[in-house]
Length: 188
Ligand code: URA
Image 1 (cartoon, rainbow, N blue to C red):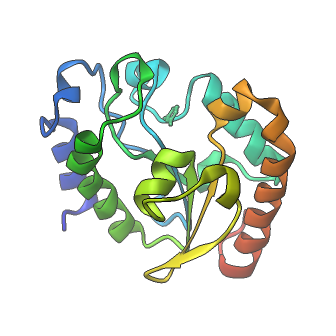
Image 2: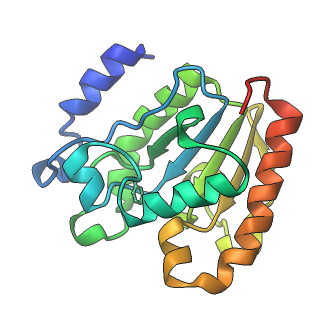
């Protein structure tokens, strides 16, 4: 296992999958090194690739609004992605790209030891919770894995495309808020 510094340097120079050839920046993820809650998206989009920061585009603005509904702000959370480099045209990351990258995320989880992991969208849920995860049926449910409470919500970009899913997501956010109150010790 690498420490934060070594891990960041390794990620920033990573060439383990072909996405390195088209990236502008590696999006390592960001947040307090003792965050109790981790949010995991799919992969960087254009704005993230340009800035090197997760969820800063339109989806990211919407994510901030979602968090604000339960009085959360991103500064308290660690926000990362399944893959750290942008897939061209924002396509879903390939299995091989996810495989190449997942060790870095696992290392981040091992360093942080979060109490709660929230998967944003089906790609993260299928990789982190279970392979056959069905986001439409299983969003908002809680799963325990290695002592970590895990759940998934619709991806903010999906909610921008399909506002009909927003009420369900509000309920999921309230569930997250309750879980934070139950398990977390920091002030939010
Ligand atoms: N979508 C994601 O899944 N992750 C980001 O960082 C930005 C958009």
